[in-house]
Amino acid sequence: KNEVEQSPQNLTAQEGEFITINCSYSVGISALHWLQQHPGGGIVSLFMLSSGKKKHGRLIATINIQEKHSSLHITASHPRDSAVYICAGRNLNSGGGADGLTFGKGTHLIIQP
Amino acid sequence: GAGVSQSPRYKVAKRGQDVALRCDPISGHVSLFWYQQALGQGPEFLTYFQNEAQLDKSGLPSDRFFAERPEGSVSTLKIQRTQQEDSAVYLCASSLRGAATYNEQFFGPGTRLTVL
Image (cartoon, rainbow over all chains, first blue to last red; front, side, top):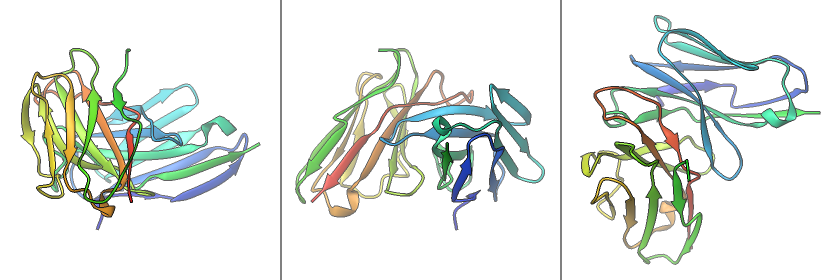
């Protein structure tokens, strides 16, 4: 059982829609990343958060430590937002090294014009 | 360059061949990580370096996998006698400080390894 679960696995939406991607984790973490991966493999870190809420442009990330849940929101979505979005937690019990991350399987987002 | 670079970007190997994948972290970054990402899956941790010391290699799938960072900067991931199940994207990431203080990881573009 993966300790980091994301939903949905795949999401197709129309341009302009409000997007929500969810991440749940089964063990305690000290920090959670939201990452964006474009075709070709490059990964960009969007947010790193351990509590509350962060906002950057049209992207918002929230985390509830008690409920072991985080969400990534995209407002006014655009086709260029199409990518795989991955959440990853630090300090999970099943490894990941001193600072290594344990990743969810990703949410494949397609925004249609 | 300003980011993490990896080479080669693509590698095709025949089964049984040895391969070496290179990672150039951001200059001055103390920590370096290797991850393996199978097709359609999230990345999985392989190994972690703090400067030249390999502090965690718990994710390496077999003794055919070996990583080094001899001078605390560039790292090489070597896979001996490659097998088809080694086909994946190998991602490298670096972060500024050591493990005592958690900080953001910056990822390279990855090396896509295909073993025929």
